[in-house]
Length: 319
Ligand code: UDP
Ligand code: MG
Image (cartoon, rainbow, N blue to C red; front, side, top):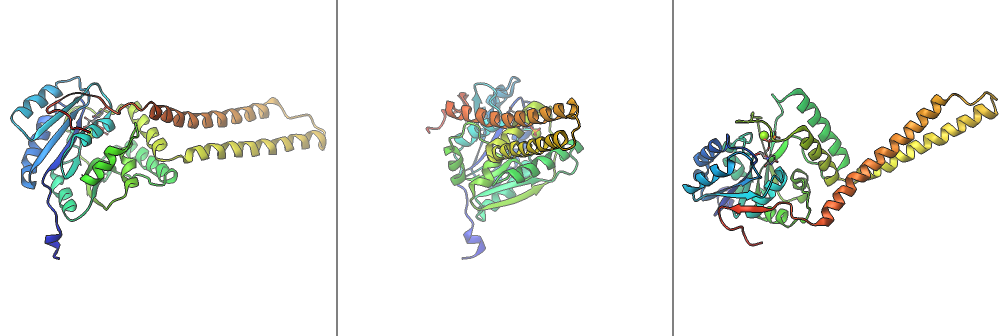
């Protein structure tokens, strides 16, 4: 079989875009997708309005009026980037499904290349953003965060990956089946397996508006990224507790030594304070880790859906 005849073609390509207050970017986004997708074949654009408070939804309605290929889903409130993506994946119908951000930081012009890799047989085509040109702080925190994940997790997400990728229908089906309430897609991709290919691109600034990730949302996502991909911190917590206990025993031996052998009075309260502080710190650290996992467990046992759809351009798909 020749290279060419081994290539497959999608009967339908889906592009899923989560959007939270992106009215300023959506016209440009749709225009750029309109310029590219027809060259690839039959396609649908599924834009998920994640409880926007600007006129994102009104804009989607009017854009969809003249474009049968544009579908929109509107969530009942802001559920967050990951949940919005899941909503879009669940509603998508293509043989392959691309996901990208609404702010044009993920260049739609890369879609032909992603699609090409899929045609050549890849089941997941993910992208890696080089971090040239991003702020020093973001580079620094990202580097250390991904190092930490690499140590903690069996399937660490790769640094520079974002939710800009193309998935085969078989992978989308697996993700749709995952019952986790709080799914961290970046952590699921390395776990899920399948034939993966990577495409890299240079970072691009937002088309308009500000990042929809507040520092607090970012921290929550980072923490969630750890507790959702690894249970090693629980083990780490006991290790820290164990080391502190060892230290305590050594210190007790030392105290007995200076009291009984040296005969000098017990050294001042400073050592006691240090010791108590150390122990307290280790306990709080451990409890904090337990708490993070417990919170995760609570969310999972509640079994609430990760998002709620208020309205859509077409009736939601039967699941
Ligand atoms: N987004 C969303 N819900 C949110 C926050 C963000 O759907 O609660 C969308 C947002 O509209 C964008 C994408 O997720 O399309 C990435 O968000 P953003 O560009 O603000 O993140 P950053 O690029 O700064 O990490
Ligand atoms: Mg962005």
